[in-house]
Image (cartoon, rainbow, N blue to C red; front, side, top):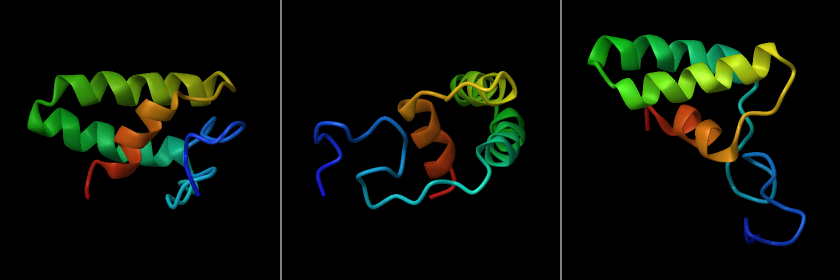
Length: 73
């Protein structure tokens, strides 16, 4: 299925072959620790946005979630 279909793509995993992470907050914390250890400042900022969104009850951007879910691949 095309991830750019109308009504699709609002959240990672919807309309694509990627599964939704079971707990985006836990994934973001794990990636944050690894990125921080590696000095990957851009990814640290992305993880902070995902964590903030999750703690505030908001949805993180699809781009940010993609970075978090694909970091170790």
